[in-house]
Image (tube, rainbow, N blue to C red; front, side):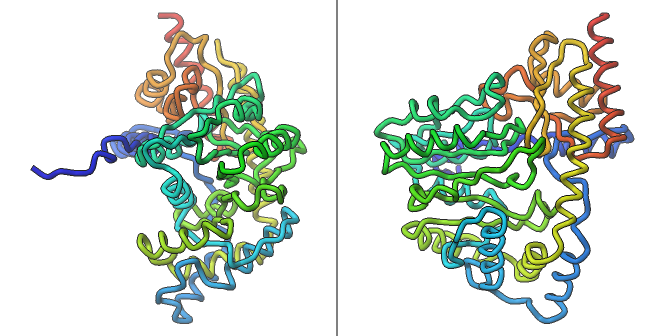
Length: 393
């Protein structure tokens, strides 16, 4: 019998893809399914970006590139960071990676081992916990609470640090809640981290350009006092509707950059060349496509929040970022995962149960409003009819 290493017994997954597979199977059988489960913009990648990749192929860019990405792309990332965030970043500290998860994978591998502790947001992106436990480290959840606007609490985070803590993961704007942590709270966290100089920070800022209601995205790159231990995660997937291109980037402190490069060489060699030229076009070309998409998400956000708050026994805090709503369903009498399953099977609406994002996700489900307003309204009608029918039974 084949033997595998023990770590694979601990590895989890992202259940949104299991829900996507089930929703796809139901649709293939003839069911009318509205998918509000998967976190993927429903927009096409802008044409000038697509054409840049096509041109790269025609121009013969078919070979390997440096493991950290081609220099013009890393320079474009550095210029974009300076334009958006006012931070100076050397291209020699930037790696181009095949999707945001790779940065998580690398950072957690660097710091996770038996006896170590890594703090992560809960509810939060499920790969955080999955990878922490895979390394043998202890996954320590930082509660993300509705009463706090789904922002992390600096005091609560700092109180969880122990001598075994090696890494803290933060995410704002956040998946699955849409929470945006205000600057005052981030200031407090950074100030408190001065007491823990050996703790690294990974800041997941993949939704950094998707904020609403006048909120400003506060990047941890804005704090020079932690730059020597900060890993930043960002990319093209959400901002430019490029999920299938698998394009992300990370910014590393000096002492970790070479480790990231070696991990790249040992795992994926490099990101495919034409996609890198598409990445340059995205960052250096017109940005109205981003503004237009975020404006449309904002319109849908208002529709979905109003609709959810009109459902029986459901309340929904207004998300300040990303493209997710995280309604509280605890008064419906349902547990979150059975409700999400029933909504898919009986009502034809795909959502994700809150516990798929952590133990503090019970009592909530996640809906993505990266779908048309027409479909969102139709889904809300179906959810209402389902809840009213079950309440009457």
